[in-house]
Length: 168
Image (cartoon, rainbow, N blue to C red):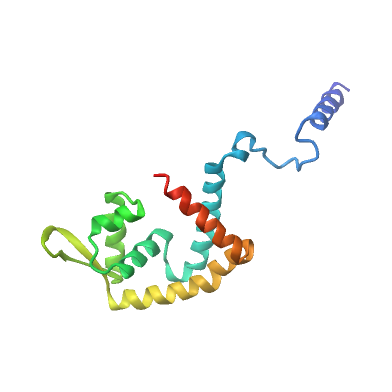
């Protein structure tokens, strides 16, 4: 009998709570629900997971794709400038670049006028690989994002995110 009484009290308390009517498996976010940083991070995780799934056949992670894209757009750019542009710390960047070099997608060369620095270039294989991966990415990953947001909302979100990025 006492057991039913406890269950009855718990059920009554749950019915009176602000969470009443929600799925009992749902975790309320509390303060997090209204925090932009939290929502951005959750969105980033979802987008990155979708990216990783779309690029599975290419064995390509978002940071690797970003490095290859920067190098393609800026052949000969110093290694330090690429890592700065992407916000990747030096130790992580060196390991990432080592992997791209071992896959023969990118190469280092001495930077003109600065023997201490490396200039970065895509290899012919890297150019072809990146172009193919980008087409695949647009066909799958970016299409899903377009479907989720709509084209105009996606453009608006890109503009808003650009404004936030400019805060630093």
